[in-house]
Image (cartoon, rainbow, N blue to C red; front, side):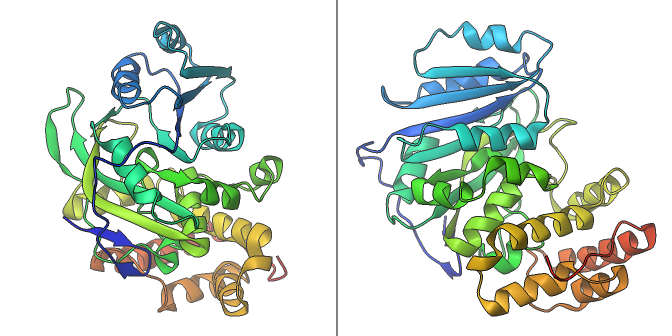
Length: 333
């Protein structure tokens, strides 16, 4: 098994003897998760040390989720019960309110099960470099009863900025960040970030750290990822994956989501980009709808993981252009 590193292939050895000197905080958002949340919490806390922490923000559950969490009565678990703001904003809240004394920040969904070496592998990978790092892994796909269904798609292109601009390979529930990566994330105030229409926290993290740091993709699986109606899009294998993605555009425009994110990136981090990179990103997300669509379909720098993905991306761009989902945007962001 190999580990892919930003802009290069590299093997990062897993050493289970590494002492857990750096503490971990796990950030979990819950919402009406009474069916599976206990299994997930058990799989996490059995890997936590005495100084580690599990911070849970409940996003306005109306079932027994909060009561189930409280039943664990574990001093390492902190629970914040909030109003319903949506999963992305809930995770952003967690990222901005996490105790910064920790060295490693891991994201968790409510309905998965962590495999026993998940935290140890993240520690090993993130301890090797003090520069900004994002660690993510492949997924073991399972059904609602944890019966194996297969693996999430392997990467054909190393993780990097040219890929992050147009595609996300860092599934949120596998992400771990080091402290330097958190500094990059928190450079922008949460209030400013919430003004931008950023739909996916994990894609945003991949975009940021692929530019300002290093993204590590571990081909080993560290999580059992339950497939159900709320999280299965994009995790199927082969051509069926693209069929699911194509069906999903009926309810949301992926190109529009990408453009909002790129404009937020330029607005908040543009002064830290190279002249060439700022010019490139600006050319992709500003101008008239036709100019933007032309730039996206003709650009050779954008990298997609699957060969068919390039055709799908171009097709979605043209489709959204004719649907009116690509809007004019002035170049002076």
